[in-house]
Image (cartoon, rainbow, N blue to C red; front, side, top):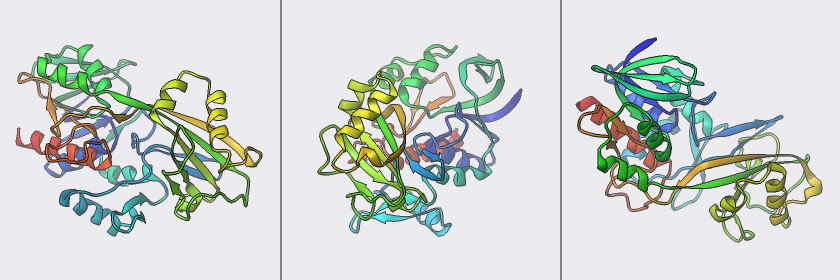
Length: 325
């Protein structure tokens, strides 16, 4: 059993950024994540000799606070501008997942920790995994998608305010299906030189990205993103059926005869339809548990969309509030 000041549930960029700020303030922090790697929806998959991003493909900057961080990441050689003259799209070198790994290099992380419940134990919270492992913390920060955080809280020994229940219940996510198609060597595509296209695509296709042209892969791996509508209609189908449907829709871009391999990624929580108009949410006045993440937007955020910047700003806000308490 380990005892810490703050347990952070979720190793996405919101949780990792919050952890770095808390550690800078002298807090004893542990990040718990059910996956085998940090990153969350900043996800990169290795496929034979290639690699492809299959969650967030890039990020943009709208605030000075986030720009300061991005400038530092750029100086470190972690990110670079990808495309977009007037509104730069930034990519992470060697894949988006690598950015979170860089940020998390000094952060204590317990991976493959699937949290089952949280129990109140005096001044501490006991976080129990599905395998019976235990972590004790004075404060808890939850950064998974809001529906997962709400489900966890309602199955735990936690007093939730009616406002918290209503706020978390309103945050509904759309799913996303992403096909990862490896092409045979020396096969060209009709995608732009940047490798990214999100307009003039077939019905049901939201974006296509060539990881070779993006500069993160030695092999040409194409990420095909279905729209939320198509993703919902196909989500329960077998992988082969979904991949076949995606390939048939992009046949003007990819000849199926040139396909060397194909894989599918399912995102149950991809983009929030409704967001929370504050960067954090405390579950009640009696509990030292705060919820944050990309669907928790500052009230001056004009985009209204979940994105990497909103996740980072939410994580920073959560760290500040925890430090202030």
